[in-house]
Image (tube, rainbow, N blue to C red; front, side):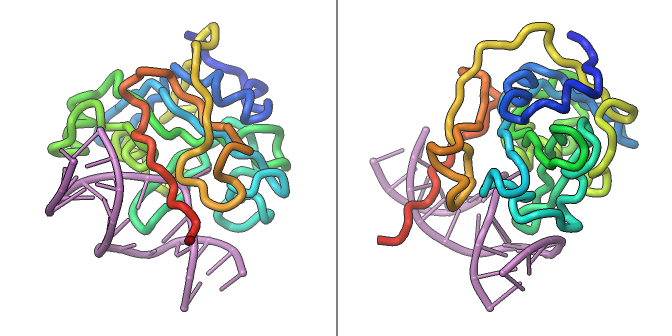
Length: 202
DNA sequence: GCTCCGATCATCT
DNA sequence: GATGATCGGAGCT
């Protein structure tokens, strides 16, 4: 394991995402620290390039963090109840991100269980909304540097064998086989359950 | 295991 | 005013 330099995050998110599989991210919240090992990620490119990206139509107040320094946290509120977490990629001014979709808890298991009463251990961080709750990262922490406290991030020395496929839950042109930018560790229990996307009306 | 469906609201049109 | 990078529960196989 090693701590990456800032420049590591300047690469294309499609290259970056698989390199982050197996990485350990920890967050020290007021009530304690939880660390997770990433097992599923999705890459999102920027303005005009990726119809599935929040940045596709340009900069807005919500997505402004993606246009800033790489290695920071882009957090957004989804479906009226979930917080999803991305790692900003590419040089400042461009806009890209890597969505953290699934992980397993490797430290602070007792705390993670307390945050998700009644949830099985393997489900604590299996899914993007669940992942943010297990870590204890609120929306307001968006924009923070993942390379500085209260965060820490360690990556593997060598990439792991991984699988690739279409992104989950992305509708319209950004879904489907044209953008096979979902990366996961085959067989890992932290990989989110695949949800078949709804077919177009007949 | 699977499918269907409602919750719930910031964001953008 | 509609949509969505989701989740959990109900009910079925």
